[in-house]
Length: 263
Image (cartoon, rainbow, N blue to C red):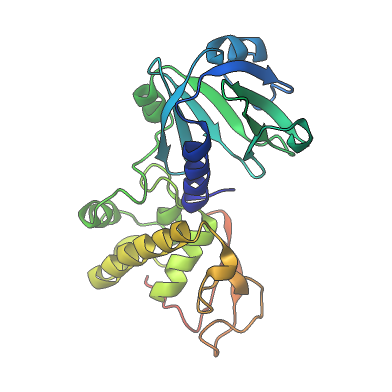
């Protein structure tokens, strides 16, 4: 599932290709991923409209329309945007496409149909309904520390809580825990304040690092856990071994010899 940095990359692509252009034709090849309106309604609602901007909230990308409404693009596991002008460049699993006045097309490709597309008339109400917290990159350290005060669950569960930190997912939660040497099963409110501050700072650093590199894992440092997520592998510290367990309902990778558990 795309996490905050991946969705930021989609946003950048969307902004660079699809803003300020009138949609003259909307084609829907498969409306299964369109959740709150029919395919025909989707065509009627978007034809003639223009995207004036975009807004990212964690793992959610919203295209801002010229009538003040929003189009939610939630990419699932295999969703992708493809901007093209030639028919032969049409993505194989295109589910719908916007044909712009300039002759170019923005296609939404989704082989496994796990994406979720919705037409949103009131963004504030939608975010409240979904209990979607603030974007993990836009929170303050004070907010982060305040939210941790009363949390008795695992720090992994806290980092994955989308009502608190929208955008954090499994990979980045594990990485933040590894880089701060905190075991992901640690009880959130038992972690010392200094380590909580380190968690916040490292989270921001890792998210920005990924964004700056357009989520190219090959460019990540060798001391990142990303490339060592296999049981029994020697961890980046060159001494301990990588282990896995189900924590907060997710497969979690860590190094018991490197990361301290606070209970």
